[in-house]
Length: 266
Image 1 (cartoon, rainbow, N blue to C red):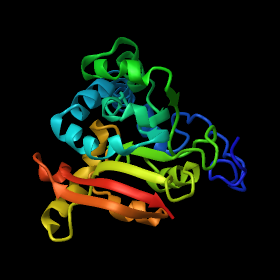
Image 2 (cartoon, rainbow, N blue to C red):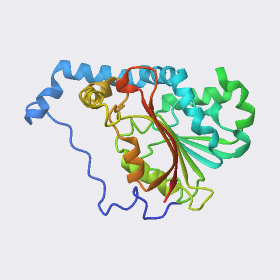
Image 3 (tube, one colour):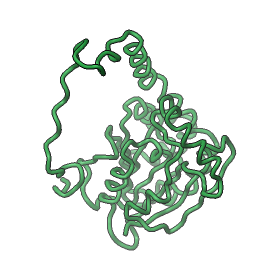
């Protein structure tokens, strides 16, 4: 069990009660909810996120550019490993399985985890070569990286995160949770990451476009933010970089500035 000091269990205040459903005419904000167009648009959005988005994300994240980035960091994982934003399991073939004692994958999307389970159970596509090596080592958990009370303090040697910090709503809280569950010590306590984010300071035009487009981009990409400074976020969360590569890759500049590397828990 986790200690009572972790950020999910001790906020000092009980959860706020859920608001009562609004009635037509009860407030100005309720009017928009009850309009047919608003109701239909919300239903369409929910169906898109439930039925379409997991498949779209699976295909996009399977592209070569993402595979190259994850291959730079994922094989370095060892011991007991936590992967947050596990998604549909694209990192699975990249692990050096003889070095991995156990892998816990956490993701809020049941649909994406279902794809990952098929990769493991049926050996889909590139997964065929590692299914046997990974057998019995992988546990998949539906949940948010922002709050992982089921995981004990200092219980993992490494945390892997691949193309997920851009999407997690409270990314600072998620990184604090990653730090909490990482072991202390010279050999452990490693955060292995491959992400895209905010363009460099010497490219203000791309930065400006990233900030303009992010509110619209998020609506059809599952909440993906184009303009997060991954280097600053990781450092502010209490990590020290052991290696860090920042560069553009092929693709639209607003979505192709990548951060890859390894950071250790301070």
